[in-house]
Length: 367
Ligand SMILES: [Zn+2]
Image 1 (cartoon, helix red, strand yellow):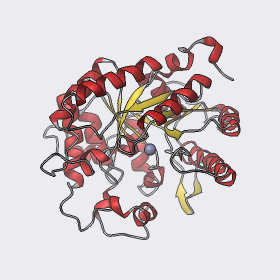
Image 2 (cartoon, rainbow, N blue to C red):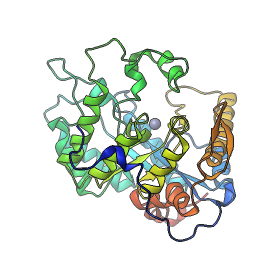
Image 3 (cartoon, rainbow, N blue to C red):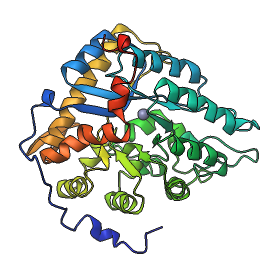
Image 4 (cartoon, rainbow, N blue to C red):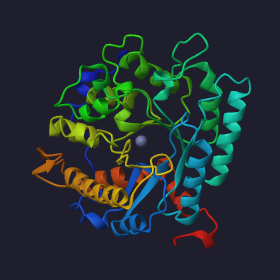
């Protein structure tokens, strides 16, 4: 598994390249343009739109998933949000995983994705169901690097779109439930994704190797590893992939809490060494088409999002001790130039957001 030519253990202990340029102090929260590179907003909520504009935050709004039967409806909502608010909700499409046994599967998926690209989709999402849920006719799990998907990956690469990949899970999914784990709540509530004691499932290492194999087979495909590329426990492993795969990027959504558990200097070293490869994200989930919502739930969701966006800015841009998720942690105090890349420059470049924000008919912009 380990790359033979890179002394991986040393990657993050070497001094980072000096950071040149505008290294003035971090701007106040509202002044920093923030892009949540991993968001799921599936309702046009005026109060949320107002909040995002007030705090200077835009999203990459991700369609997910491919087996729940809502594929068309989900994309229709994402498109509608994008057409009404192109500055807030550029969207990432996804593809069907129910018709994998159809002889025209890849052709149909490619046609579907092309339609979403014409509508403005900036990327394509693939979810952990690939490798952990869908199976072939013999009952074996279909892995993310299965040849079935090669024409789809090649097509996505040829269209210049990134593949945003949530493949595998945090390592905790394969370990006994631990109340001190960041993921205890999720695996307690979603036992179907908790794989400890289920040897019939692929291992974490096998899934990560399959994800890496996609990048090996498709070197032109830009892969954005969602949730720290499911390697939240292993910063050296992240650095190893960033060295080995020049088109690999990561975003931190739902894993800032994991970063806060690593030594601050080591996390900082990762950001300073790979400032062009890491993007901000949160992974808020609002899908009332699937889970009917009350006004109280809606308000609660908006309030929690706002608190999280602020707390995370304090962690990345702040200095000294702070409280995150009820724990005392040390803020990262990233230099301004690194913060700018992390909070918006990388996402704008990788998802071509400047085009997405202004590429729609003028009459529909910014209501
Ligand atoms: Zn997500």
